[in-house]
Length: 372
Image (cartoon, rainbow, N blue to C red; front, side, top):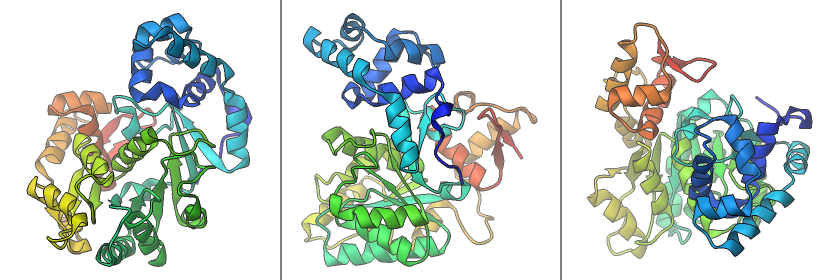
């Protein structure tokens, strides 16, 4: 288990990444445009230039008004990444900056990866075998009972259960996994030192003791609309599948399902009473092709997991493995593998993670993959 980095670990590029993360108003799309404008292309020097962006550069790169560009430039100047890293270390929070070598590979291939990922608690390879379980805040007794049961069964089978610490289905999923003695990960729509909703702070402590909590927002940042979208994205990327237990037509949980599809993860849904408003969203997912789930065994079958691990690989996973095998022992990064397999980088990264968990490929220190 890793511990929070000491303040002395803060290189200039690392401080620049955290400085950018301390201005959430830039947004993921805004950061992407800003980095493109300074010619970052993944180079650390681009982070330094972006963190020192002038109002003129911000206005040109983001297409915003002069007044808004000036506000963003002031926010960048006033941001104190060193103080943020000190506060994180004192709170036992690890900060993984985009330029750090151990920044999660699955996040690097996103179009707009977080500048900094905040993590509290233990996290390791076994947590790559994870399923996100989420749904409506207005959960019925049926939904709460089902989420708790499914999460508990998954946890007992060694699967890490991810949820968003929200009311309703999320709480039932977290508690189901923890009550079963398993692991759970919480992804917050707020900073880790400002948990939302606040009444779930005791649950967060329990999660961090048996798992970990994540956020891409500054430590003390409260919940905001963009935070919920970022939560859905992180939940999808950290999981191999997203299971929606109960959701209305406009439930925010459906955002996690959309993110799962965009990143090549499986979408699963629990059928509910057809006359219940909180079943309309899951019904639509099922109509659109989500796999129906009534038990943990259904999840295992969809993902190709079994006790003997002798099931054949899904077509896309098999294609990724074949392309890597064709390199005859040479390693390839996720982007090169994606291109060879004819897949998007996000989708290929998900399949590479699954293949790694199956013990079929390994990741090198440089983040490339090789067939075992």
